[in-house]
Image (cartoon, rainbow, N blue to C red; front, side, top):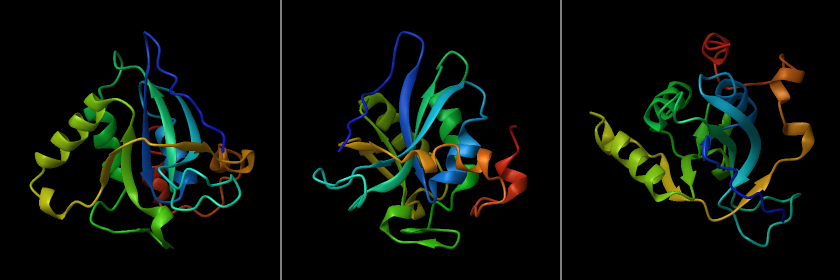
Amino acid sequence: MTQIPNKPNDENEVIYFAGGCLWGVQEFLKHLPGVKDTEAGRANGESNTTQSSYDGYAECVQVSFSPKAVTLTQLIDYFFEIIDPYSVNKQGQDIGKKYRTGIYSKQIKHLQIAREYINKRDDAEQVVVEILALNNYVKSDDEHQERLSRFPNDYCHIPKNILHKYK
């Protein structure tokens, strides 16, 4: 398993969003204001998983962002535009544990902000988005990186009008 280190520096912070099939999630997030870099990957699966099996992992996108340009609360708000926060292990037509929704980070303050965001919602008791510390991360194969930029007609569970809203 390849372990990708967090890439924060004085300017940027890193967080991981799982919102179903990672192709659309990456395509949406990479165009948001303040997002500096994205990488398709898998989060919080079994630590002995090889890159070919991904047991227990959630498909996710690693997001490097500038907190001077966008707050984490704003990023979470954008993220909620593309997910069904009430659905367990399912987004669109994609069904299975790897399609669960989640917000993961190695920074406790990120997890606190995410929990506060959900707790302030009127529907907080219905939201099933995981908020967990990032235990492990595996970068997805190259064929999954920037997939919808290279193949814009591939399947995506996010409606095109939302997917390209911030391009």
